[in-house]
Length: 150
Ligand code: CDP
Image (cartoon, rainbow, N blue to C red; front, side):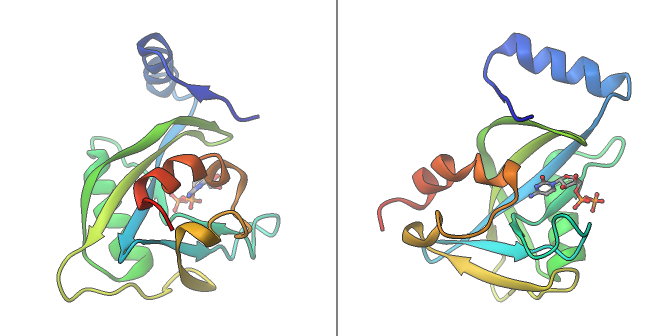
């Protein structure tokens, strides 16, 4: 089940649930270049293999979300990124809470599929047609706003 959390109260509930181990904070990266966002094709678990996501993963204990974004992009995409701010609201997922951060490539850096089946740059007109994993599909209105008109 997917719910959008908007209020400060909801934010505190997520923080409390996370603190007692009810779930992890997962960051996902809306990596933007030339008006397109990077989609990465999952290889696991079998139920999600072949579907597309924003690269990311669990934030480690004591790690800042922005640092997790930089680390996950280095690990999964082999590239250097610079986070530029949050996108959308918190999304409840089975693993905990998903928070999307926009990012740009550091000059000269380019992503490679080190842990994914493939990568593609998705422009605003193609966003809807991609077979996104459920949580990431919920971010599409915010990604559209981030990318601007097609
Ligand atoms: O690499 P790590 O195991 O930390 O993370 P992951 O397995 O890629 O993601 C942790 C959880 O977040 C999984 O349940 C993913 O399905 C979910 N996730 C998501 O819904 N959307 C993303 N863009 C990234 C992760």
